[in-house]
Amino acid sequence: MKTFLRYAVIVFVLFLIAFFVLLPPLFDKFTNRVTDTTPSEPSSEKAKALHSQLWIADLHADALLWSRGLSSQNKRGHVDIPRLIEGNVALQSFTVVSKVPFELNFERNDDKTDSITLLAIAQCWPIRTWCSLTQRALYQAEKLHTFAEDSKDRFVVIKSKPDLGKYVARRQDEPEITAGFLGIEGAQALEGDLAKLRTLFDAGFRMMAPTHFFDTEIGGSAHGVDKGGLTEFGRQVIREMEQLGMIVDLAHASPKTIDDVLDMATKPVVVSHTGVKGTCDNIRNLSDQHLQRIAKTGGVIGIAYFEQATCGKDVAAIVDAIKYTAELVGVEHVALGSDFDGAVVTPFDTAELVRLTDGLLKAGFSQNEIASIMGGNVRQLLFEVLPD
Image (cartoon, rainbow, N blue to C red; front, side, top):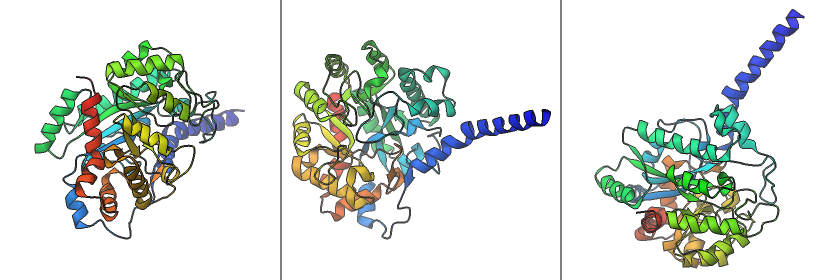
């Protein structure tokens, strides 16, 4: 009996080690991969020279979900502060994930299961986050602010127009710095309470999507069960977001939710990470009509880098989606929306972003057009929408 108990204890300890120490980084490493680590053709000198002069912004990365510090360079995943600086990224949106169903798919998900609970426990997040979606969002915001404090002023968090203006001016003389702003992937983080929108705003969040992979109290998801439109509560949330200076993000929204938001929007909206049906026709991606309606708000469309968004695994597929969107609605409405660290496989990480600049040059875009796509459009939108 003593021998059995001894072995039982050993097995239990090994399980705990695997669960808390080994599984989270292994899962991160397996899901957030780069496919083309050794490109057959290096980026041109012209692309490198242009890239070094760009003001680059990316509308979507889920790096805060994972148990790796962003202050130092990592061997796994897609984004950290040193790699942002190496890739000449001026501004990265750090979007937080609060709930994801088990058996995730693009077609139909309900909200009855949640894999983030296990991930939060396995990564030793505070107990307050285990059963609260709001606290999960707040904890990830705290992580970003901590990274900023630890960065020795190489990384700043943008919350307002004055913040952005000060940072843009500073970066002209100090190009080896970078910045971020906070977004929320799915308004389930409100837990049905409008007052929590102000709580999240005060924590630094400046962008939020009504839905992620399932329908919420706000509205329908493209991947939900009912796939309906905005609820009355959802309309209240959108109105309050506009008043606060929070950007409405239509990524993952159902077609009806997109229409309902666009019917009431008085400020530019974004789609932080998406593909387009014109190059990759699936339920995840935007129709021509929605691209045109989003552009009419003055908004921007962030093109994602992963296969389900572009129907390809290489830079050319990303460029095709960008080109299609630019030709349909204008270069001034196109942006980057990588979905880095969102459990996706991409052709490159943020340090190798020059490869996209090279691809855009080869596709015939002018240097001014590339400057707009790579970040100029996002910067202009933020100066319009962020609070004073």
